[in-house]
Length: 372
Image (cartoon, rainbow, N blue to C red; front, top):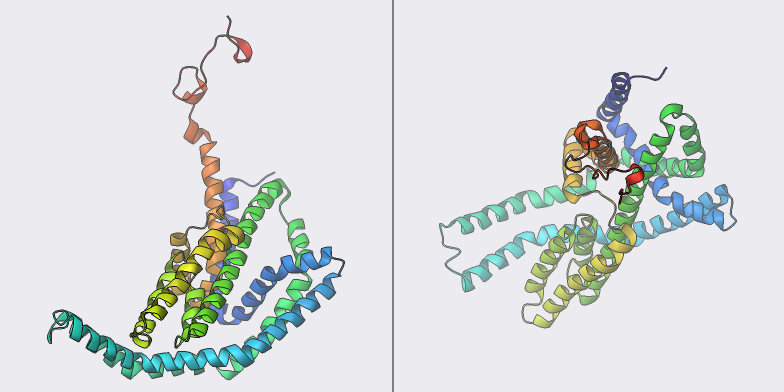
């Protein structure tokens, strides 16, 4: 006999509680496995495509791993050191830039920066905070984000986990499909396909958009000669998943730096602004429609709430699982709404009676034909 709705809710509630408890108690332990699983999920379509070209799953996985290793080595040798140097230099230069801003405002807008005004006190406070905490914050981020042991474990475990999950991905999916309860298997499969479509459309697509735009902004700003262009491009690309925020934040930071660096060369300031205008045009008209699409159904506000909530409760691991959880809850919510709209609770018995509002007209003849 099939389980009642109350019994099903009880078992699903227990599974959800166990999942949250595992995040709470094993978050730091689960981190490399979650990252490895995310990488495997991201690269599974690439492996499938290589299989269609005639390669075996093992050869496809090995080829992807070699290419990923080469990219990682290239980034570790060329990009990451430069990014770290520019980040430190930007933080160390922040007090000087702030003093220049204060001088500029004092010369051109003296009424804003009165000696005892709010704006003046705010700038002084920000400058003192940056001077006292900026270097400490940078050193903490760069040296204390992970201990050496954790870093080594992370670097070793993540590729191994990603390799084996990518190798056995299709087999694992088939086993999980066999474990689905027979009575609800069609519905669960349909919901799983919808969840996968949301994740594939958003995570894979949006990460690709972030990578493309971050690379474009960084390269373009460095070619222009903007100081800290690599950092600004990386920041703009990193937060591009939030519509307009990446370009707004990166553009404001880049134009602000350009004002100090190219104050007597307005042409280059315009070039920096044009770089972000072109980036927004490319993103809005080509990248996002092509790679992400308009049917993802993952609203930015809902995404921000999920990231904030899970990040507060479970730390960095919570932020990693926030997007899949948000996508799953969104699909389940839409499924629940569809069920409600097709239920008697919404439709009521009045809808079945001729003459009721919204009911089909009574033609007086079988089959919906008039008697005329």
